[in-house]
Image (cartoon, rainbow, N blue to C red; front, top):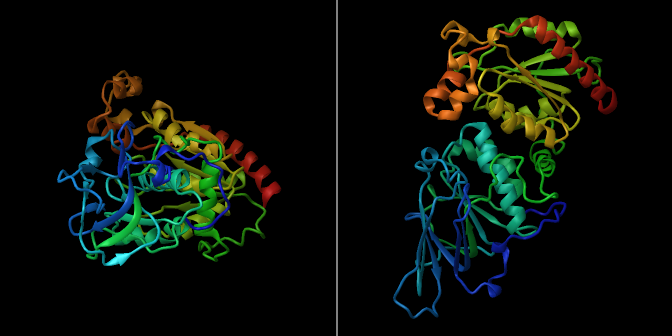
Length: 413
């Protein structure tokens, strides 16, 4: 791994040196979230067949050992796993001719599944990558070998990938040369939601330090606004995360809510990130802001870019309380962010236009979800539902956001 401040993390069982582990292949399939296979010995990778050959000339037995793995840490969910390419590990006395020789071990994972949704990009991708590198390859150089590494993904996250490895990534789908490594690990370690870290020194704050190296690092990627510079403005900056129309959970009176925030004293920036929005742009905007407000959705993953001590208020539509807490609330608290929730009342949900107020969909979202969190149920609360804020009530919450943001601004700038 690229040299950086050492993190004192206990090594996992698969980080054992090869001489202490007589097995050439060790696969741990005991976890709900992921499988992990370790190859201790010369490994030849043929991208054309997605086969990892373990070459052992001392092997005289004609019997081959074969293991298969889908290296994506969402093993418990059939839908995304069906979209993950299965990789094969084989042992034998010989393998394909090596065309590219590497001196560092390979770490192999997939950027398929739910990749493309920024929450999953981090929760199922970069945070498990962070955990795995620091559990197995701490202070070591490693080469990332990625399945389904599409061009947009490589381009968007290049600077973050560069923090994990000094080498260009190897893309299994585009490369045609055989590569040789001294050893390899296939799969990523995950403990579920992003706050679940195995060791006290392996936290979201450490991960945010990597984000700062990747997207901060003294670069000047200022977010273009008509506002005066932050230093000259005495008002706390509030980033209001907007959602595109037609996808659900849209704040229908967003302009009025923005006006209320401005009346309270905020410098408000409406920000609607898209798949093409630069990570540097998002980082620069949020890292220089004092507060963020947005309705529950993947774009709130960008709260990872907020500075500890800043304020984040999540607007929670009906049926999103648990997901909102686990996906964004707990991570925010773990990073030292002042986290608040605005749980909407029934009258603020557009679902009351479709369902009777006594319908279980309205009265007991938890009960509906408890029976089966199916795509149909998800569509009700995540796709069909929009929000019309009670501006009188919302104003009182924003006043508290302002008070905390002002304290943060006066202290940190």
